[in-house]
Length: 478
Image (cartoon, rainbow, N blue to C red; front, side, top):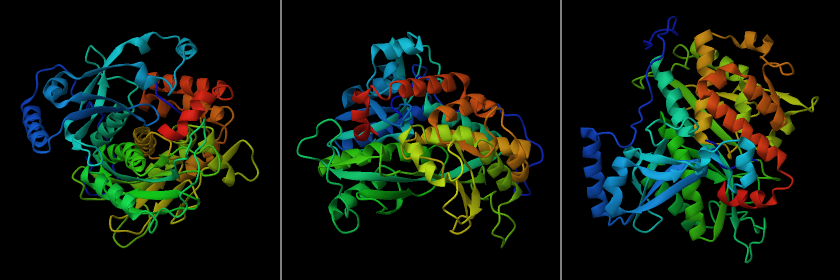
């Protein structure tokens, strides 16, 4: 179970030569002299705040699990905090939901007690229509010396998008989430959350759905479709594709927003499922040129087959599927969905792909108005969307750089003694080992991040049976 975090190609054929990446992600550290374009942004935001009578602004950042951590400030301090940032203890982003003293000792680090600075990405400033006189802005965490926090999932995702851009590509992607809506019991005791709203969608609570869809659109989260799903109270939401970090930002905003809107109607929205419902999280994506004019996954005109670039990318996803599964299904409970694909093995299940087939790990969608997409279906809705985005890029780009073929990947062994390529571990502890030993993913996401992630996951595994207090909060926060 998961909880808080530690700290150009031309429009011709697939690329033959690549330039070495050099660009740093576009993140401005706090405290530096404010550039002119940021001054203009600040003035525009201040005018909007005055027009909408905004009294409070939430400075939000994601933790390891995609849960929003924030500090709210009165509007009169916005200019100062937008320029210099807002301080927050590092442990808020890098420990579990309910950190204990022995957890800090387990990691043998004192850095959790130090402050970090939340520096706002002003392009993400949004007025929240479901709260009174409140806005929010998504932040990137920095050390007090002005260096990006290397365990920040959003920073890691920006790094990978920057790498992609250096090779002449942009990512066009969208998440699809399953989650559950519950009615709040008269008394919530421990894990008691009762009365799933079985027919909530479409005809039971149209007011709730309408406020949700319209409110999300108002803050820039463009929901393309929604429907009821297989289980009682289970919903499926699909977002409209976006380029770059905006796809993950939308998913992050939705994960908090749906809980706030649901609370107004005496519901609890939960992406976490310990038993019963296996809430999936799918990343549909395609690779485009920098200008967003050409889909590199689409083959020659009139064909419904992946291009060579698309095949290289898919081969990378397949080769690194074991490590990807650790980041995309990061809890014991959400890995249960893999078991339905395991017939002969009790240890692993093979990653499979197919055209227009929802039963595999990777589905190649050939229909729709934007050309071919690959659906990465390894994920759970509990996974951090920034890490899903980053890991998918790292694996796919490795396939392109090495010009991997799907056939070669099927025969190649990974750098582990017990796993072959395409084998997805059923147990989280085996997936953690695969993540540690996947040198490509480790280098892409950063050795510091991988060490923190693996350490915290192992801590959660070791304390899973005794830490009932942590389990009590999962359905509410995730």
